[in-house]
Length: 329
Ligand SMILES: Nc1nc2c(ncn2[C@@H]2O[C@H](COP(=O)(O)OP(=O)(O)O)[C@@H](O)[C@H]2O)c(=O)[nH]1
Ligand SMILES: [Mg+2]
Image (cartoon, rainbow, N blue to C red; front, top):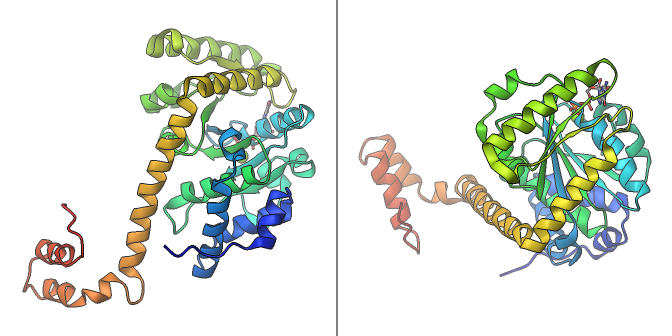
């Protein structure tokens, strides 16, 4: 198989931890241009072979818009920097916009982190290569190669995309509003079944009492649903900085446990399977629609179907039977 050539200069910048090189590499991943795609693939292939990748945790922070994800990441990020980490943040946030590659701190609400020694980057929410997930994984792999750890991934959502975030990260932290309840009734049960750490945010000022009640309610619900292995429910205030060190301890303890049990590596393997499958479907779709692609090659079958000489299912089957391998569909 022909491997695209590695951009040595860019790669050197990445492994040296240069944020501009990393940002340029991520832009290549996001680009729709075929030549950019090839360069991106070479970088991602090289980065995938880095031993750092296996030890760099990817942590997802998810929850409804406005719950305080970005503010928590900003505060948690400060805590991590002080503890000697160099976190990267990928924000898959439809409301955040990038301007000429630079991040507007107030728009992602991570002003302190964006100024510090971290790497902060909004990520497109959709794209041509199997959705936001593929980009985000590529970006996360490059961040790890550049020595940033952990990689924090912010995604918006309650209920719809928990499986998607599950395919991206090693650990899912779900944020809840004080008083959360109604939206949780509408949440898929799956969310509470899969979440690794639950956080009641904004536990400060007049909201503190409500936040404590919410914590107790969810802790009870989780025990019912998941028994003694139920995840803990943390109370944090990103604004006041309370509960942040404790939250990080809970996260680290869970990660350690999974590394030891092998669950960590297993989950990464499952994620690569999902990525492979999604990537294959996306690549096949491109191969069908590209100029000179499969659809053009089988235009006569498409026309036969259009004019009723063949039924559509027959035409599709005729294409598949014409391939050098015979998929059973
Ligand atoms: N009282 C309080 N407000 C907060 C806290 N964290 C965030 N907020 C506010 O909640 C709003 C949404 O925060 P943001 O981090 O952008 O939420 P996101 O949409 O989940 O990323 C902002 O107005 C924040 O100032 C907190 O710990 N306490
Ligand atoms: Mg946000």
